[in-house]
Length: 607
Image 1 (cartoon, rainbow, N blue to C red):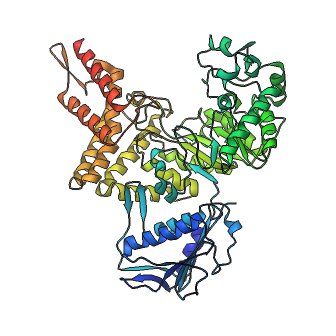
Image 2: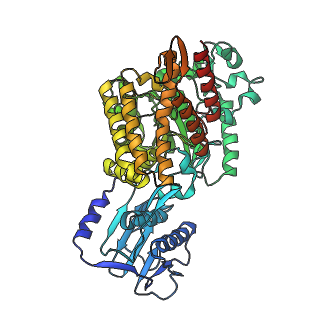
Image 3: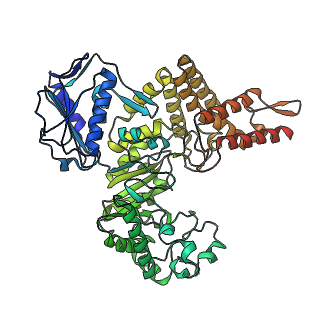
């Protein structure tokens, strides 16, 4: 159920003339009240309310327990004996309610972080606080802290799991402020997840079992394991899912892992990653029979996963619908505690997925899974993995895609951004996605404008012009925007052609001039410009000596333009200063990239 309480809040506020005055200068009659049995989250929520209010008012309110005498002016945090009529169960895990009267403020949350999310929402919505990034947190200085009396603001998210997989979400405060879940980039573990994805080899390690038991592993074209690897370069060890010993090993190893991490709810039992060219699922007689009956390789997978889920009824067993397993099965239904992790890796990003007729098979797969289960996690991809710093004008499809997923029964999201530090708009994009995952129906343009004005300040209008023109030109070009591409693909007839690059540079020149007296903001603007410089380099690598924006031809001699060498030097220094880690997923640290680029420039001029 999707609650649309913001509209109700505005109605109540507009009809109420009274105000709740929390502080007046250094004066206040308020105390913060928590239950004498308050848990960790409620205590943190109260402490954060105390800390955040002191930032704008310099007033630090005392925190008392609800077994003390009730006062006339109270800020009641969590489930207390001062309670309101709202039931905690109605708020589910992360929902909350904010309510005010003429003398009291109540913030109550669901069973997990709802209370903390309610505190942060109160300061963001009603007092104008903003967390644009871990290092850019803004709040007003107020002589009097006043909010309307009569607020009734109840929010319960439609999406139960919300992850943008961006490096900045490693900051705990940022993640909690934006109501996001976190995931360790190396171990793929988190408080919610015992194991995240591609876990077959962790559960039945190939190096441990293959020599003695090759029958544990997938048969493809009559071959298994090492025989497959000899002629399939994209091969990854998959399992034979109808072998009873494989099931027993998975149950034993998974059970042992659960004992080490008893609080984790989600446990992935899922296929290894693989090259899209190869169908590497097991085709032994028993597995093939299940898949034929189900009209999809997902048949043998769901048959196996259901057996695992039966042994762990209090856990959520997650598995992939990815590449060869994306098609839903015809003859089997996932158990209630089986989570389907459906992936959009084959989809493009130049138009909303729902409107893209070239991915009609994905449409039918999503609709098919949604008829089988209401337990779907969408794994979407929101950056260009082969070139993490490249301009990637997909902002206009973020909202329609998330809305489309939700309409088709998705209630959990892994929006895979850039978990290594840096990347194109690595503060703006996760900010927008976080807002959408909490409420898919936000005023997207208003939220983006608020971010640009808060983060880039006086440079915001020029950054906005850059964003809008880039998206307009992508749409006009008719070219696809894919996650495995290069800026040079859009250099001839697309949004990165020469005349547009000049126009983008003009926007950034104006943006930098607008904040020249603000060093911190200026660096943010220069960082936002890095993708254009990177694109210039990549286009030159494609065009070679013909790229006259980089090379000069004089009497048959080719040389590098002096300003390009300066750009490269500044580019490398700014990448280093910002801690950028890789230019490509898992590859090319900036220093290595720049050294390779220097070698390329030298090779062209020597020829």
